[in-house]
Every structure is written in structure tokens, then in C-alpha cells.
Image: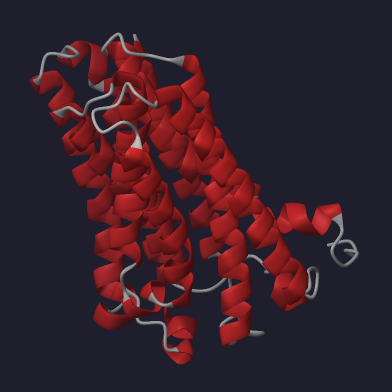
Length: 303
């Protein structure tokens, strides 16, 4: 990698980890597709939800970068992508400013969502303020405390499933439906496969750092099958939309089947590699599979 000037724009771009934004985009896309299929689509709230989700994802990446550096988790034996603070690309003080600015900008976008929805939501929009506060608080708690205690997978289900899918639908349709709940679980499970690959790859380093992820607690075999079953369960849940009559089986069956086939192929590669930096390739394939299911599901629901 070329020499990176400290606190430069390129350094901030690397710290933002733009590849992770797929995890923010997919839930908003699914929630918007459900709103569209129900005849409730609204462009401005959907766009603001997308910007808020991306802003909070970047803020979470900055927080993760800083706190892992301060905790000493980003050691020389790190297997994942290099981190900005640990590499000296961004100073800790500058990263604190970056976190603050990113959160403030995200909150301003959140106020835009509130302005679009105020007076039309059942509780006047106060629920969005509470939801936004929880997003900010847990962005800090995740890295500082909860991910070290094995709560990461549950938080992914909540903040990459129920919150963004449900929230995106809610600000457009002003209600929630069983299909939104199912879609939220699908989104959370699929995006959690990305966290599981990270934790599977880093299981030895995490154990040394005192980071008690589920895979550290229950071992490599558990992590291997946990990854596989997340994809399988997410695929099976997709057939809810056939059950409800939203889609016919012939219209819909190809979407989850394509995803599941790729998911199983990626899983088999992960099992063969088992450990080391080569698992970063599995990270890339998992991200691809995750994005594919999100797009296929969104297209199917919108058609």
C-alpha cells in the first residue's frame, strides 16, 4: 500500500470502510421495497433513512477503530484489514473529532426524517427520537463493552434488522406488518454472516484480547455451523412472502435458491481454509452474497 499521509482525506476514506456500507444499504432497501409493494413508498423519507444508516455505519466504524486501538485489540498479529488508528493514519484525537462530526451530521439527517413524518406517525414522531438515541448509544456500547461479552450477533439482528428495516417502512407507511418483522429477521441474519466470518477468522486473537465472542466461547465447530445455518434460516424465512401471497412460488423461488447455493459454496471454502488471512476472501464473498440476496429480495418485492 502506498504511503498514507496522516489525517488525510484518503486516510479518512480507509477508516470509513466503505465496503461495510452494504450492511447499512440492504436493510433500508428491503424496508423500502416492502413499502413500495404495499403502495406506501415515499422517496424523501426513504432517501433520508439511507443517508442516516450510512452515516451511523461510518460512525460505528470510527468508534470501532478508536476503541479497539485504545483497548490494544489491534495488535501486530491482526488478520483483518488494517485499522487507521493502529497504523497511525489517523490520530486518536482526530478520530474523536471524526466520530463527533459524523454522529452530529447523522442526527441532522435524522431530524430531516422526523420533519417529514411529524404529525403523521401514531405517536407524533417521538418514537423516532428514542430510536435515534438508541442507535447512537449502542454504536458506542457495541465496541466498548457488548462485543467483548458476546452480544454482537444479537445487536446485528436488532440494528441491522429490526431497526433499519422496520424504521424505513414505518416512516413511509406509518405502521408495521408481520412481513416487515420477517424481513427484518432475514436482513439481520444475513448481515450477521459477515460478523461471524470476522469472528471466525479472529477467534484466536479475540481469545488473547479477552473478547468473548460466541465463537470464542463455543469453539471453531460452532462458528462453522453457525455461519451455515444463518444463511439457511434466512433463506427459509424468505418463503413467508409466498405463504402470504405477496409472491407466487414461481416468481420467487429463484431468489433465495441462488443466494443459498452461493452461501453454501462460500461456507465450504471457509471450512477448507479454516484459519489465517485467506479467510478475508470469505469475507468478500459473504459480503457479495449478502448484497445479492438483498437486491434479489428487493427486486422481487417491488415487481
